[in-house]
Length: 254
Image 1 (tube, one colour):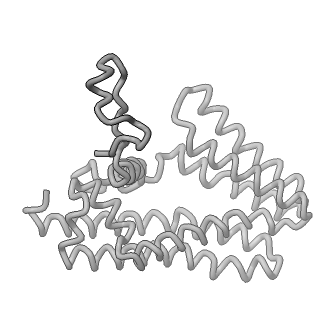
Image 2: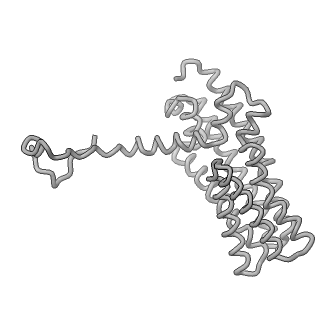
Image 3: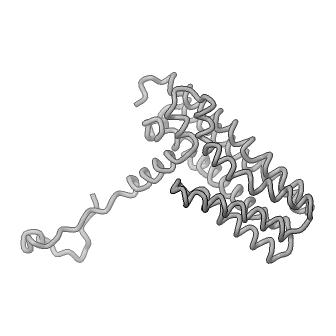
């Protein structure tokens, strides 16, 4: 429990019974734990964790459903098609951002969750502005490089500090909290899984950065699509299968 502020006079609770006593500040660990648990519930692993087995419907839900997949793929696909046919940056960006905006407005009208759609729209607009300012079509992908690099850095850092992020997420989803830290097999497995996720983001950079520096916009757009959901979905399923196997072998885990 947090201590009273230094300014509070000793015995003030007795001398001023009507004064409102200060509420204790939540401990940092509790705040961090709640944030991690909330992030875990919003992750694709959560949808898989709620099901006994990852059938097609559950896997689709883990990827955001058909609508989420369309929102993730369609703007980039239309940019690729438009740029390949016209090589006009303004037209290509207008088509891509316009579709992202339409999809977001549709969610608002239907009063469905809009967080991911708005995030995608903001990213598309920011990328488009950067490309228009520089006049370089390949700069439309710079924000994606930054995002992939940031994810890879966070995942690798979590391994270095011995709190592999996949283990943290899985621990909360499996009601195991941080008990997995005391299990050598789980800890090592979560390190490997976290490195696999970091590897996916690093692989995207390794393939796409040379295309960026070569100015090959068409292939850059294509590889962004091919290395998006087609990599994410199998790795998500593999991660859950491994996590489920780990906890089935540990019936005593709470």
